[in-house]
Image (cartoon, rainbow, N blue to C red; front, top):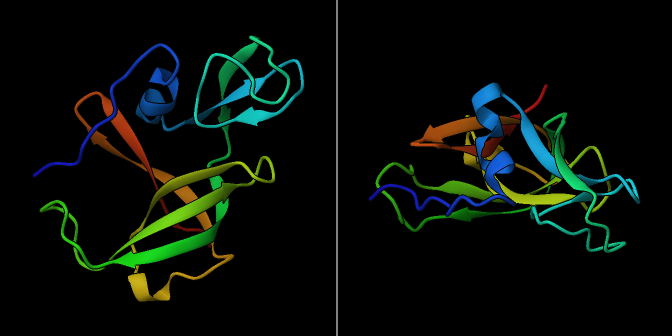
Length: 132
């Protein structure tokens, strides 16, 4: 069974397809200078409609994680890491993702990570791997 893919729309298309160019695109409000995730047409901080997706560094840290031993899809090797990643650009700017490319038992809180992308059809899933 393949991964479930998001339904693309005008609000989230940049986030899910930025990986095609190797970019993690996060909505940013020009009015209050805050990043907004998940993507949406209005800033939840100041209610401005002046929100657009812009590239971020793709760097962050693991703030929480769990090791999952349930095989929801055939391509996931057990165990796999489901993590909350806080991006470097803004305190509290967090994504739910997977940490890949390393022994899952070595993942830890405050571990520096960087984005990588898994392309499936017209979606580039942002995944994270350990950063030097």
